[in-house]
Each structure stands twice: as structure tokens, then as C-alpha cells.
Image: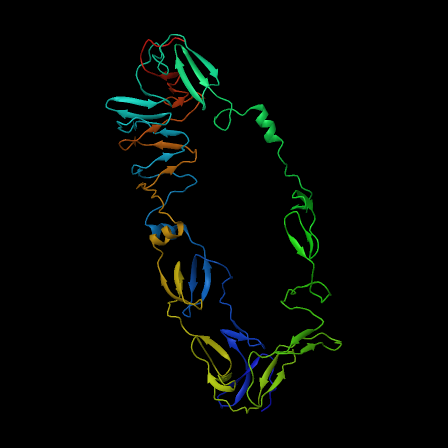
Length: 474
């Protein structure tokens, strides 16, 4: 038997127990370099949330997850973050509803303010306290009542006519009220005072060093200890204004340049010097080559008496003589002693004496699944139904049930509207904060907070809610 063998064929024992040249086929093929390639299963390579598999654990089809897959797993329909309509009540569980747009209510519903005996601390907050609706105007708590002649007191002053004065006293911004005047003190900012920036200080800050620098240059301290703009040179051939550095290198064995591997990871040199363990050196220099070629050496030492054999493409291997006697369906495989040994393919695949490879079943029933278990070889070995826990884990949160649910955290509306609500009720010791708005409403029933005053539109005119009294006139 010679070592003549058609490219990409292998020796396999036939039914007559003689080594026969065949090409690997069926569930896998093999190149003349011994690279085994599994047959395509019919699916396009990619990532899928839902797959169909055959009995061998191979994915044969990739599918998109459908909305029914999600709702079946959750056992309810989640709320669409981009906007949706609830079909059940949404209980906030005492958590905040923040940054909402307009809140509109369906007809014949009620807004239930929080029963709260603790005064609010944020301007515009509103709550219900023992028969009285109260709100915080940014400095004091006020009780809503029937509008009267006006304010009774402003920062402790009750004069009929009051004024505002600007001052610079103190070490911090402050407001003081005395007589009929309210003084706003804003000192000039310094090391010991917080206040307004002076013109002189602004000029000092404006005269600091700029960030102007010519394209591709860098700041380097010179001999005088002053930052100067220079261009990189030497072993660096260039740098872009995006910070990309190009080294002065070579992949073609040019002298006096940094050696760089080419795109195949190969270093090109004119020769290599190997120093002896104790003395001397060996310099390897090829003769003049008329046609470029490569030699790939075996990965291990050959056995005694074996020789290197070239496959004609520069791939070297250890070879020894052998006969063509080979048991049916066996193949020659190098053993631990580096000798060709007759074995039958087993384990994850078998092969017939015609070279047809058949993958072993993985234990999974062929079908379509949204959730699968795979082994370290990428084979599907088990299937399961998608569960609500899978959805929650993937989302990293539990979605809201559209049919009605209880929140366990705050819901920020991102300035979007809450429309067509039923009754709105609040947990105890909470606050209803009106929108700070200087634009009058145009829909009957709208209410807003405008610079210390709660206003509402009655369908024809804007009205202000306030405390009854004889108060300040101007």
C-alpha cells in the first residue's frame, strides 16, 4: 500500500475489510487539511430567541419571539412604555408618580388627596389635613379657602404697602424683612463670601491659558519647564488629531525599523541569529528563492524511523509505511504513540464504510422551543417553556400588568400625560404636587401652581384660590 490518496479522502475499512479511499459526507465533511465541517442544518447563522431543533440537537430553524409567547409566559399583557391604555386599576403601593404631563380624569370621578398631618416642603405640594386642603408655597404652608381681600402677611410683615430692596450685606445670599421693606442681600463673591462674581474676577478667569493647539501636535514641557507644542518624531512616524499613533515599522524586512507582524502573524526578516547556550551563534539565511513558498512543520516529534512527508502544499508530517488492510467502517487515527491505528468513529458521531457521518442524538425531542439547554458543544439537549421569571430576568424588572397591578417603585411619566383616569386616591402622609405653570389653563377643571398661588379654570375665567382676609393691598 502506498501513501497515494485523493485530496480530502480518508482511508475507511469497507465491507470486505480493506482500506478504501472515501470522502467524508452526511452530517459532516472533511478537507484535505483534516478540518471537519458540520453540514448546514438549514438555518441562517444568527441569534434567535426561539428555535426549532432536530433529534440530534441541531438548530434547524430560527424564529422571532411573538407577543403571544411573552403574554403566555407572563400570564398577562404588559404595559407598553411608549404609551398604552390600562384595562384595570394601577395601584402605586404608596410609591411616587413623578414628572407626569397633564393628568386628565374621566367624567364622574374623584381626586382623593392624601390624608397628611405633616406639612409639605416642596413648592406646589397639596394635601388634605383634618377637613382642610393645604399647600406649600415655597416658604409657608397655606390653607385653601374662599378668596377674600388679599394676603394678611408677607414674611412676617403686615403693612398695607411693602417694597423689595437689593443689598450686599453679609457673607451669603440672604433675605431680611423689617418695617415695610424686604431686603435681598447678595454680597460680592470672595474666599469667605458666597455671592455675585465681580467684573475684576471675571477678567482674571477669562485671561487663563486657552486650549488652542495645532492639529497633530502635543503639549510637552521644555527645558524651561513651560508647556510647548511639538510634533512627535523618532520611532513614531506620525499621530493624527484623533490620537492614532503610527510607528516607524516594517513588514518587509527593511533595515533599522521596528519589526511588525503582517496580517497573517508572520514576521519578515532577511535572517535570524540563534545564540548558543554557552557560546557561538547560528545565523539562518535562505538562499535566493525564485518562487515563494511556506513549510508547516508537524506539531510533535515523529517516531523512530519516520520521515517528514510533504503533502505538496508545504504541510509536513511524519509518515511510515502501512498496508491497506482495515476493518469495515474503521479509520486510521494516530494513537498516543504517533502511529496510525484502526478505530471506529464513536462518541458524538459515527461513520459508515462509505464515509457518511451521522451525529448522535442529543436527547431532545425535535420541535420548536423558546427556551433550550445546550451542552458545551453547542448541541440542544433539553427544552422548556418560557416562564414569567425568564421574562423578568431578561428585562431586569417585572413589567406592569395591563389588566391592573400594584407598583413597588416610583413611576416617572417623563412629562407625558395621564389621561382618562378613574378615581385617583393617595396613600396617607403623601402630597399632591401641582405643576409649576405660568400659562393659564383652557379646559374647565384644570388646576396649576403659579408663583405662590393655586389657580384653576372654571370654563370661562381663571380663578385664584387663597386664604380669606383683609391683608396687604399692594
